[in-house]
Length: 165
Image (cartoon, rainbow, N blue to C red):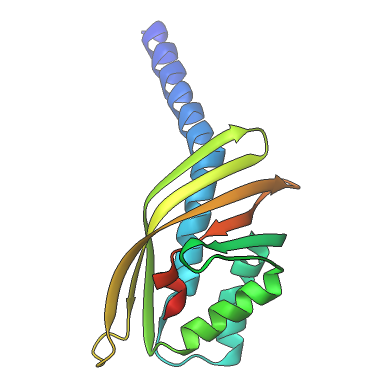
């Protein structure tokens, strides 16, 4: 009887340790971070400046001090600081009456220690119940770098259709 209890406890402990290792793996941490950022970018109606600042803070903290932004269709390539990235996002959000952003099919690869590559589909629904409603899905890719135990976006490749609106 004692052997069965010990075996059950060992199996349970192994399962818990396995789950913890999976949950806190770099891939899962990055996926959760991108999902949280998508929620921060969404909005439903007017927002006060304080609400905007609170929503943009996690975005700003997720951007590397020098982030390369590339829009291949426009031959646009620029290195931006986090403040400029959040400024652009605030302007983009302000042009929409409401905005819902979801990241789908997120794939994360860790090619080397401290480096990450992320690809996913950004599903953007904006201005629902408005004449200028749009519902679009675009592929985006990001390169990340781990600095002081935090993953930061150091490069973003965005489609023209996503930055145009």
